[in-house]
Image 1: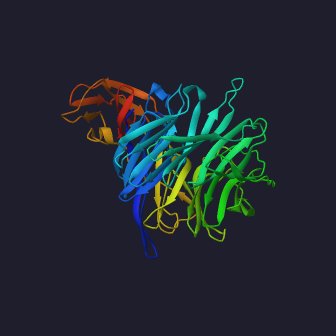
Image 2: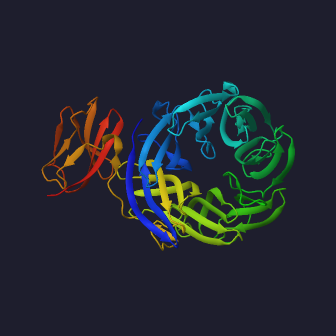
Image 3: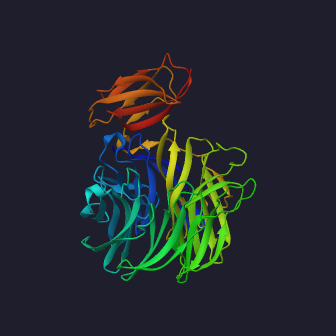
Length: 501
């Protein structure tokens, strides 16, 4: 499915001292009516590259993820789709003007995939590794010197139960396999989460595992191994009931930071608050920071600001203590080099036309600001869809200068579908009828015009086969509606109208 949804929530220029940072909040989508999440981002000289993932099996589609190029102001330069799954996080890097994406092939094969592209997203080569019946998936990627390393999982499938074994694959820069090795064969389940550091001779990896089953005894670890598969050291983190992945970053030449959960429990607090464990490059614990406040939070990713601290992102349920079904906020924070929390930011749409689920990646940008990506449940078309969310912020994590801890995004504009951007709907407001005008070179191909209520119910449907299609409104009550144009089951435009009487 090829649909691009783009709307600008707000765009501004923010000044922080001598730093000038462009800020914006945008949502776009490439797959019609399917959950989609912007999970990874990388800055290039003239903009940003964003990997968005979805389920390959949705609507029997072979397209599994998209790569989007954004300009510095957040406009879409191009979008391309590919027929394999990208790893959800840490499966994407740019090196010497080449894009490398790691992932796995479509079912039923599930093999590791490594793909090299140019800066226009065109594939230069693609390699697969392992055997189709091994169920291999989710490889992370790192480039060190003249080698590429993939760190993923192989499902041993004992008695039809998932039992993941961590696999490391070493290749040349052309993707030719040089070595493969595994570890933790003694455990029932090990989930690879990150390649923290890679050199030609050493890897530092993070993972979570279950010694015997995964009901209550999740554990996490960071380990160092040489590139022959020999372990140098390993550091296990606290036992936790939290099942989400560990994340590790190196913030300077001496310190590693590992995100996991602590076992701390206090009345009215979550039992396993997210915690940052600090350790040296030999795996020795040197301190920790626990996010102990009365909300339910989760950190999905950390990014270092070399020598100056780190930033992190995830989600937060600000009203969890008083309202367990409260909507989530996208959560961002910054910590300085002395492990002091500088600021936290939570972003929500107060109109609830877009409900944030989480941010999955956040990076510092060359203009002194930050850019975060994640997902937003968008109801602007009357349909509950999950779309990619891109939030560009200033140096203090603000969309607008001087923002507070909680930020409500209210100035949402009409959704613009780029594929149908030349389709016009008028008059608006409308009384007795509304017209849909198509461009002269429009390809009709099973086109239908729908009148949809604000709650997503289709009230009228008309086949479109002329340049102008008119929909009568005499039997329609006053209020907001949507004109949706579909080709087959693909939505190519959606415009909000108001009916007046």
